[in-house]
Length: 250
Image 1 (tube, one colour):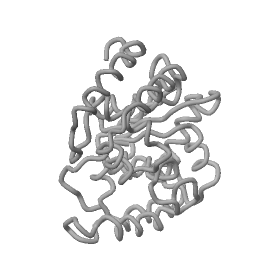
Image 2 (cartoon, rainbow, N blue to C red):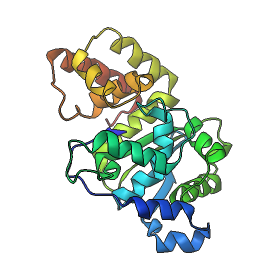
Image 3 (cartoon, rainbow, N blue to C red):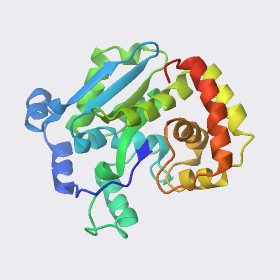
């Protein structure tokens, strides 16, 4: 999941809650909500499904509960069942203090891309209630395209044409699905304290995904607002060598 500091957009809470509560006449509601702006396809080589959208709101609201179930820094949400309203209320209280307009739900403009493993997708699909039309669209497409028949799969998403964000999320998928790549990354990262990068990540993500975020940011672009040290540059050179063995064109 890539955190950005672009200009914030006010999200309409009532719009989202109404969407979640409305009757699930899926085909009709997808058209009326503009959900056809979302597309999904399976990528080659690995069981990775890639969602793209022309609209960041649609993308974020498709992934929100799956993403936060997977890696929210708040233990009230990570690995827990929760409603959209509960999460939105918490997010506004937690993150609108230093943003304008104050009290706005800015999740869709705060987060630009997403990555989630199969276990999180299944959990939200099977144990959560009050699914939104966007969530239902996603689960329906994954079912039709055979994702749930895979032993393991990964789901990533970004705004259409945002190549840098795609590359970041793809590294997360590779870290999860390719054991050789995963182990090599962990072995090298363990040799570097990189306190600045670790601190930046832990302020925004669950500690359970720390190593995954370190490798993804190191390989695809340092996060905004994080001081870059010589130690981080050395780590980057070493991780790039591993990356090139698994992604020759990287």
